[in-house]
Length: 103
Image (tube, rainbow, N blue to C red; front, side, top):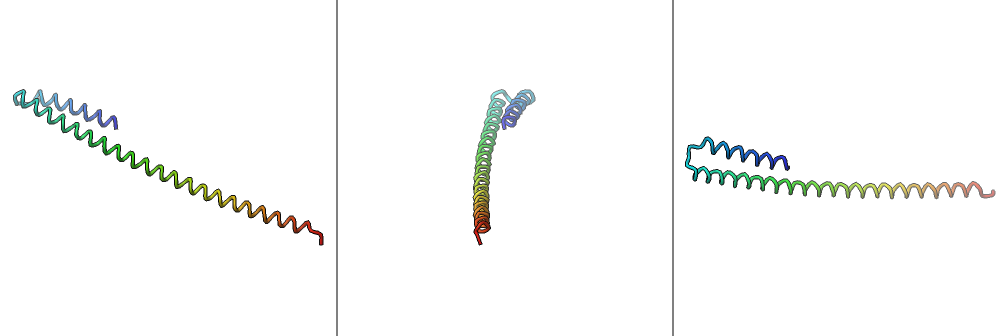
């Protein structure tokens, strides 16, 4: 993002310099044209920055939601595993108790 803004600013400066050197207009008109070009480039830069900011927030929200979903799934799997282990433990305990009973 910073590279893009830097490129826009450098491009604006180079364009302004070229306009000054090559423009067949009076200085006042050239300065006005430069101010207009500068204003347009600043507006475009602000628009890009705003878009990048909103896209970043959107992406962060999606990543957060995905992480939350993964945590919920992990908790569910662990709970199921724990329940399975407890059931297996109970079955083994019952089997051992039955096998040790006198006939």
